[in-house]
Image 1 (spheres, rainbow, N blue to C red):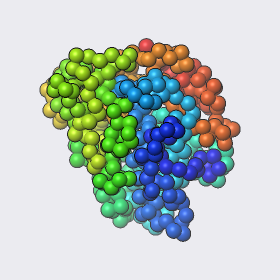
Image 2: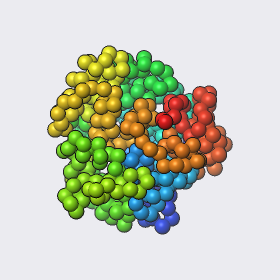
Image 3: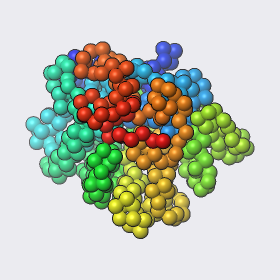
Length: 463
C-alpha cells in the first residue's frame, strides 16, 4: 500500500482548516521510521505509540464528541464543520493516512515480523493488539477499508468488507492472546501503556474482542452478544488495567485535549454539550468536575445542538482531565463492565445485568439504579466521554436520543461515518467518490445495500 496510503506529514486536528496551526505535530510521528537500517524495533514501536495516541485522541474523537453532543462548537470551524456536519473528504484525510503510513499498519507489521524472527512472541502479541485497535477503529469510522492488501506492495489495494475486517481483527486478537503467553522478553519499558505486562495486554485484548463483537450485533444478531460476554468475562477487571495513552509535559508530548485548550488558540471554541451535562446534572455525577469547568454561578451547563444555553450557563472542557500528562482512557474496565451489562441484559434480563452496571457505577461514586438498556447505555455514554466508542454505541442502540442538526446532505440524521481521505480517493481507483459515499456510505464491497451515509454494520439509522 506504499503508493496510495503512505502520505507524509503529521497528524493534526487542525488539518482541515488552512488557518489552523499544526498544534498536534509530533516529531516522532512525522519522521519516517520505516528505514530498517536506522530504526530499531523499539524505535518503530515508539513511533507507533506516538502516532496512534494522537489518532485515538485527536480529530475523530473531537468529531465524535461533537456529533454525540458531549461537546458543542461555539466558534470557528467547530460550529459548521463538526457541529453542523459540514465535512468533506479532506476533514479526516490525515487520519485515514495515519492508519497505514508512518506509525501505522506498515510499522506494526514490521514490528510483528521482526519480533517473530527474534522469537519474542510477547512483543509480537503486543503489536498484534495494537494492529487490531488501529484497524478496528478504521473500520468503525469508514466501513469497508483496505486491509488484507494494505501492508504489502500493492499500489491500489482492494477494499475489504467491514464485517470481514472485524472477523480478521478478532482472529488477530486471538493470535495475540496466544503469542502473549509465549516467550519474551517483550517491549518492556518501551511499552508506554503497560510496561510490557502481558497479563494486562491479554485482558485488553479480550475487551477489544468484546467491543468488536458488539459492533456486529446490528448486522448479525444476538449471537454476537454471547461472543462479547465470552470475551469480556476475561477482559479488563479493574481501573489499574485500563489501556490509556501516555503523555509528558514536553511540548509535543502533551495530552491532545490539553494542547487544544492551552496552545491551539481555539480552546474556547469547543464547550460542554447540553445533552451530556444535563444527564450528569440529573444524577449529581461526581465526574462533572473531571470533565468540565464550572460556570460563573458555580454549576455545570452546556450548549445544545441549536445553540441554546440553559440557566446554568456554559462550562468549558476544562475539568481536572485538562492536564498535560492526563492519560486518556481508550479501553477500560468501565467499558468492559458495561459491555457485560448490555449483553447480559439483552440475552438474560435485568437481574443478570444488574451486578455489572452496579460495579461500574460504584467505581465512579454513584449509587445503584435499575438495569435497563436505557440506563446501561446512558451510563456508558457518560463514562466514555471523549472516546470514539460512544459514537459506535449510539449507532447500535440509538441511546441517548439525540436531536440531529438538520442537514439534508445526511438525511437530517447524525452521520454514521466519515469520508475516505481525499488522498486515497485521488490515488486509489478502488475508493468510491464522495458523491457515491453519500448514497451508499462505506458499503464499497460488502453488498449490504446500505442507503445513506452509514456503514454496513449499521443498516438501521437512528430516528
